[in-house]
Length: 427
Image (cartoon, one colour):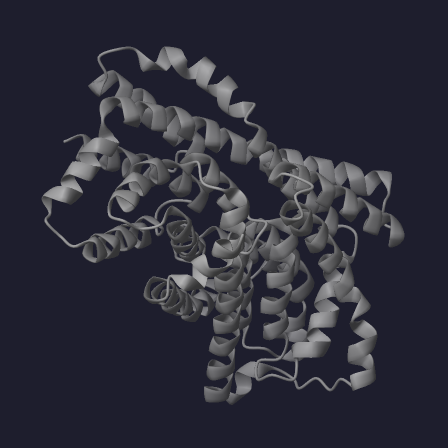
């Protein structure tokens, strides 16, 4: 009964277009009034305070700020230009630059939305200029942006680690290989589609080897930030939160070197950081109260009893959970889905004998799928907002082939768990 009421109310609030944070908080209050024997709402203030001072969450605004500074300091534009020179010979041309640049930017910003927005801002003007197939080009931008939630440093993995008390450095290591393989699958998807449809690959770009080698310094700047952020963690010099702060300092240094460190740039970066952080933190705090209510009224235990009562094998239960996430991803925003479902689902997964670090990677892949599945896929709207004209169905149609690439990737991680667990085992 509790399960049915909870999911029915959640879908109702989403259908009514109530903002995500408000919907989660309202759901917590309704469940408190309906099923709790004590007024749990009186604990809201204390829960807000405890979660808002969580040290690990300080990394969230730091990584958001890192992406904002990179966007405004020409680092992303120069990076895209360099990737274009090295990858444009492949069938699909600059669409491979969209994927490659997204992978590199994801390795510095930790945000899927920031990745899609940054690379999209640089790439979209090339559609008409080079004669690309519009839907596939836009779809490659939306799909490339999803890499930000998997390739470290990932804000999603930080939140997952916080909710499950799992090592964030190990989660970061677990996401590297699947993230790179997924980027390769995206590029393979582009190659196959452009070979099958000769006019989709756009105008052929001819680049000399001297131009390619001359562009390499433009790849060193994001590589420097990645080494500072990730290297400081595994060298034992910094926690994930401290490494995010070091990343911001590195980005400011590069901005100064590029002559972009101005008062106006800083103010715009701070404003963008505050807006995004406020949205994320409000969702996290509302979800923290909801999770508290769900724990007290016994939803997690009810869900576990329901799964056990089905009499299915662990693999069959895993497939059911994946199917539920894929359906939910069509209606829920990925961050709210991560925060609300993790405390309920992960105990069941662990009880079935699966590794929580491995499942963290699977869950990030499922959340990535939610970012580009209509009607709520956030990256679809991010890319459409950059495009500014034309129907959003172009972005949706272009993203569909990459959804199938994600299904292949999920299958690979399930079939070969060592893909996610090999690097963490070396730590």
